[in-house]
Image 1: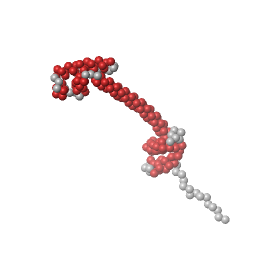
Image 2: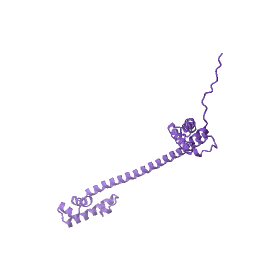
Image 3: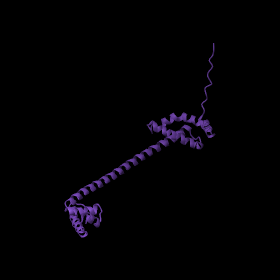
Image 4: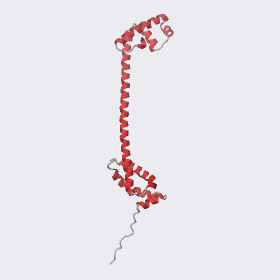
Length: 199
């Protein structure tokens, strides 16, 4: 009867301490083993902080990167897995704080934008209403007075240019402008509009 020999050729598990020594001696491939070894543990540690898989994966990558950089300072006071978990939790908390800050900043920015838009819209509405009232007031003037006013203020024509366009004398234009300003001023004040520019 044959006896079955117990299998003893199973590969020995390399300890974390050995892998860390190998990494510190320049064998980066040893760190890949550590990453594979603790990836699932970190997912479990971060589950309560970050339910989203993609978010956890990003934090885990950051954790391994930070741990790799800080590995020369790892004194072995605690297990490597404990040290790694602490880094992961710290990264997760930082991420959550940043997310809350960004969310608040976004809300503040949105409110600020809304207020600016509201003010802009109010100003635009006021200008539109004022413009309509101004046109109504101008339309109630004598047609020649209204023409003189429009050419002088709206089209910014000089007295000489208005004279060339209309055939009126300079003194006639000045009289029309003075009369139109007075009537327009009175009309605008009745409607509650500022009329200083025409006074």
